[in-house]
Image (cartoon, rainbow, N blue to C red):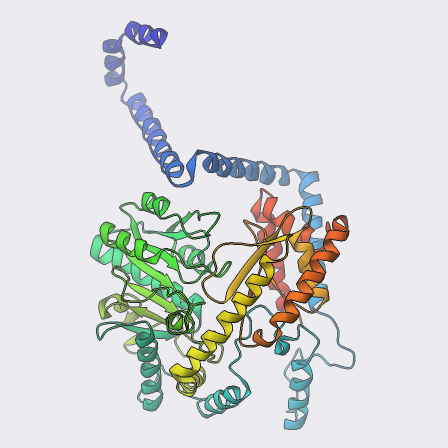
Length: 547
């Protein structure tokens, strides 16, 4: 320190100042460099305040390592080898999906002559019954939120009645307009919305989330003058928030969670909020672990910093509002919480409505207005739409209304009791298996679990798949989850028996499971260049459209 001070004392500051004044170009360069260094320093300080020094250095190392791998991939020899391996993986994915079915024709052009009704229905029936996971026996994690055969018949009839309707034309279909408005009001009632609260239906949870983000971005621009908006979300928040951020070209900061509870670190989220933040997010409950964030604390934070606060209850949907009445610990995740500006709720999950229905809610009409798109100068007339879609299916809205009015509060209350008790039974069973442990503190219908080494969790997934179970793989940390549904309730004991047998099988010979899912998901969670995984994921989507 003494040497530094001595050196500074010897600097001829007067001469340096004169040099700078007489050399404006150099002065500009120095100022630009100082500004860049200042901005980068601020970013680094903010990251350290959010993630801590160790995690920040780890993130920095991953960025550097990823950049190095991408640079190496551009080398002629190495790049060709890596790309060849990626292409092989993608080809294997496509081959596994696009399997020829013996005796089944492909229809790649419109038939010259129309087919008969019987022939068409026979083909559809065969394709409906092609081999896959037997979801009807409750062996799939989530995916199909079944309300019972009687309810399915009713919603199918409602769907058929409104098959040709379109809410874009309320003058043509006034009855459908009333049905849609009633769906929104019924969901608002479940989430304790008052007369000022409002909402719209959407095509699903992703669109509900995208609409909520759009509303807050427009609100930030028009009310607060924010042109470089950002949102702050837990790392466990649904990927639809990342999709919204990419679509709208806004910043997104992912906040770490407590490793024990898997709830968002409230203090870290507070430190991430800045003058350009328009929205913070909490989940009730999270997709990976079925955990509810500390929503009350987030609401207070939103008020203090004057930002929007969205509760994602897409998965919690028609479970969370009934927890207390069903005898479980209450999770307050509605408009009773001060600071809440929007909520998303999927009616097509535990509301048992047809796929393609969700509701996004707002605390007042002005916030909902920011979601709308209107144009008054189009030659085709004044155009206005509430969501991303123009034309929408009235059939799914009618099916949603039918499901909600058929189930009633008592029906949903009973389903909450049955499904949450099923999750608790399975969670207790997992806790009795020494090689496994539950991840986080589940509060709804989802239970996530991982394993102690040398028993690999993805080896367990492969063994469960052999036994007909489809579990969802998780990462950071590596785990599996089961989203319990009405179909899971009668097979909870069977699940636990198969899980125990699978664990024993992997434990007996752990080295045998280094391939398969372990190789895929282990690689995905450790590879520094995430663009490799992105290319494989894009190949997977391409394979969906291979005919």
